[in-house]
Length: 628
Image (tube, rainbow, N blue to C red):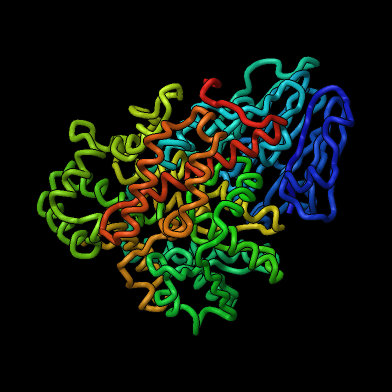
């Protein structure tokens, strides 16, 4: 495993050193390192795996692994292969040729050019910042903060979104980071910067190198597409298993993680080691659903039970490790699972991220599917789909019926503009009143919503993969596992699967109220029937409602009433107290009402992160409302 650290500027050995503190900051355990000092620059890829190479005056550092070495046919380490491809084809075309989870930094001293690139979905992180006489690059923001001309200062609009918006708005700008002076390299993009004696010569150029075709298949049947899907998924898993050291698999009761695990068994002929988070609280516990996978597919199963953890202590540790607030409570559970797996000698974790998006498995894909059917004038099909949705997915809090379906369609779709997805105003604005008046406004926030495809279902999927659900998940997982020396692999994010599934028509993804139709067909004979045909969806979540209520309420109220929290100027204190009280009443009553656990999770994460930033700045506390 390797990480990237680079600086271009006047030689100054004291600016970036390869000491143990820096290695830990980058998320590396002690081990071999590689580095390369060059004229007017210094470039390093820390860790094992041959992360640095030089070819014809081009210095390359990589973080990640290549999965299609057999197709490329070049000798050497992964870094040497990348260097050869870039020298021959240029960075953008080189990235197109790679099936890889990889971030790349290159430096050409002769042209004073720094080039950065990330894989198609951004599985490997990469950040950069322009300071005084330098441009610096790292696999996470913290090593960049405090370098000359690079402030340790959160972005006020990011703070406002964390405080009082929905987690789906946090990553709406793929080039932004939580810090004002630090930029992120967007997924599937190449960033090029010319660096002179005084630092950045002109604004960095951003080029997207990968685009998806949404033209539906017209000549392939559902049976043919399901066979192609099965073959691609098993191959994607096999290629990753071949390079993953000491691998284990996360396993829930859902289709995605189960399909990845079963595909590994099919590819290797061997049962695999699996880890699952299970809960004392039954709300999100999936032990019963997991059981159908154990006998035939799992060699060793390790259930990691989580009751009521030390939430505040764990979040304090996590925000320092993540350099930012953690988007949702599920990542605390994942954090605990990662620690257990690492302690038992695991070095690689496989999961099912991307499966919900590619296969239209999220609940909010239903109204998009309905709107597409309505736009096509298929009214009988629409009524049948709504009936199936209500039959399979009704919920005591989140009801499913024809009135609800049409209200959701009206909120998310504009009949006058087929395919255009509207932002969910109800979700974005729900907690806007909790912000202090001096903070940047969240109510009425208009997120960027791209519409490159002809249907709502595809555009909603694209939005989730590029600006909403996927970026925060990939980043949180990376920060959880990298400090433990763990790599992670997600076969559903193999670009070939996306190129297939973006051309699969909606009725092969959702039909009669059942999601993931094509995946279910593809996994016939690969998954146990109980898993393959299960329709009910628990959803990947954690029982954070009980983590902030009852006997666990006291530390929450201590934080809310603390002087630091009140004087920071982020929240309307009275409204926050009202929401905390209402959350306690809802949980204590057991009433079928939506509680405020996600808002409280974000509040606690934000405040503890800002305290961590205060420590980095050497200040007791800072008022962030003034940073706008």
